[in-house]
Image (cartoon, rainbow, N blue to C red; front, side):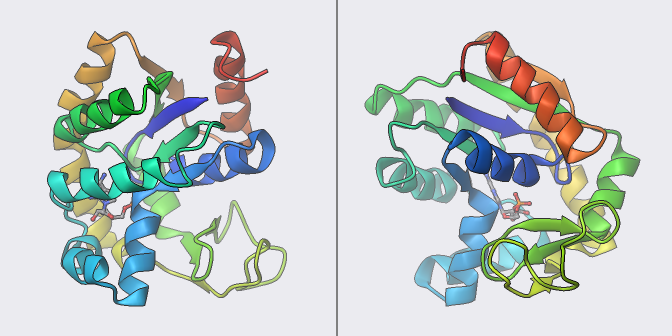
Length: 220
Ligand code: AMP
């Protein structure tokens, strides 16, 4: 299956994409995770994107599309398809992604749009913890790790993302709201937009999306 996961910060894109990778074998590419890893390595790309990512502003479209074009041509863009999480975030990025996929003759199956009330997004983001090593997401109340402060997958240390502070959360949600309308319209026009109720536990939302994937014949 070849899908993009759309929805505001806190909609559950990362947690779901991680389950698709584990249970459906679908490669997961997260722009936010790629940027955080590059920042941690202090690479040239990391240095270019650091100020944007830590303050919650969007990285310029050209740079994001360039990074994702490379990843999709590499290992991430395999015959098993892909789940893109956090990309595209703007209409210009969606058009850029289409150009890349046309080159690879790999048309998108759909854009899955996770909807949630703002109060829930703020609660999820402010309680989120992330593995410093593999990027897996947890929540202090609703998705606890088996061992306090340690990642179930790789035993890495769990941390709070710098951009998950309350002022930055509000700013990110407002930036996302502005970019979302043209982005959603882009996929709606193409008949590729599939809204899914993203409220509830991750397992509940997983089941909802799996139902959609099966109805659409994207998975068995
Ligand atoms: P995320 O992990 O998806 O919440 O992304 C964290 C941060 O990375 C965002 O607040 C942006 O600064 C940057 N970022 C991630 N994906 C994109 C994108 N598609 N376009 C622009 N900036 C992005």
